[in-house]
Image (cartoon, rainbow, N blue to C red; front, side, top):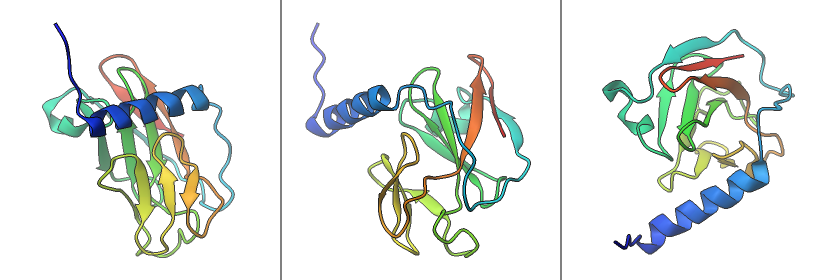
Length: 148
């Protein structure tokens, strides 16, 4: 039995695999230089029908909390990343919320033009050299705890 992937899907898979190898374990987070720390702690069930976009690899959902909201991204079966939706360049501006672009691999601020990798939060282009603010994720196979 042969499985065929179209070119776009294959390119995304290759990008994700290469970036995952480069990132290694991104659990060693550091304090963000601009965005303030706020208490954050919520639990979701990413395999439920409530969060259909998190049922597959490369899926993401938006949540309330943090400074400007939270993006939760599923890399693979057990790996999740959570980022604050506040742009490190102009986080105090209410128009600078971050969004996942149509490619599903970049997080963008349509206000200032900053773009970040969804795989590790590093800036790709735009007016900032600061990465996205990360939150910790703990997944037990059923529930995902997002916290700081």
